Length: 300
Image (cartoon, rainbow, N blue to C red; front, side, top):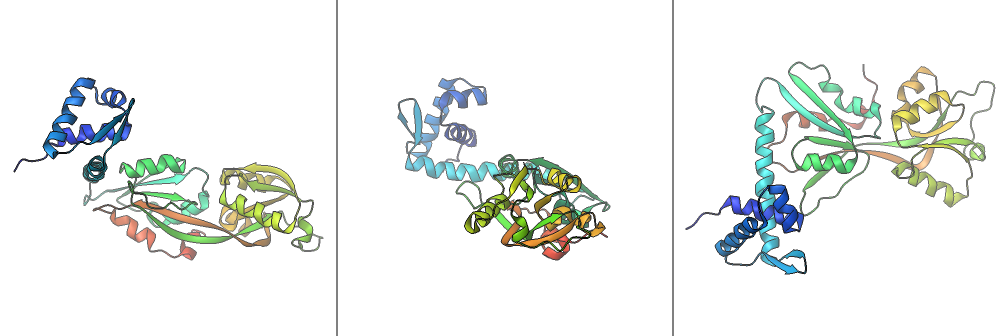
């Protein structure tokens, strides 16, 4: 029985991913004729056509879709093998690569990673980017885990595992009000200038729906994607901010800010996203077994 030519399979995989023979040939640094020949040999080996040409576009046949699914698994396992061995699995010094969405609370990130900070024999590598960019790195096994405040669902090409680490109510916070009556919600919200998360934030979307459903009106002072910047503005501006408590945890404990109220039915969820792998980094189990209270609590 003849064995599968993985060189041919890799060429097929590249063309299927690109959907274009010219682009794939440029990526692989081969001529289009050589690439066509390799794919034709693979089709002869399998006994079925893998592509149908529709104008300038190559479309996968049913056999092609099946072959692509197998190719994805084969080359993903190859990337996993390289990543595992390069990071020295089982070696005295363990490397853990974590990606965090750029707008995610720094306090949350610190709380999640706290058990490993300054631990002997552990080398943490932290990356910050958009969720899409981080998921690409995770799929290529350049990251072990992604931290986010947005869930993802498993896809045919990527078997994401999305674990909710914690859920926290969203609060309205501001500077202490000495000599004033306690903040009355929602009465005192009317006409108040607010600092809000950016319009694409799940918290902001929920807050806008909450206000629209009850005809609550306020003045928008600023909208900020980055939670670290929102925290700084909340400290310096004499106005209120809509944030999860963990974002301004230190300011609340120090009395720089106070919590006026929690917003009804509004929460921020924090997720750890991984991908199904034969080898899971041993340090991840320790991090993911902690409770929400442990993650969100102040470091000692």
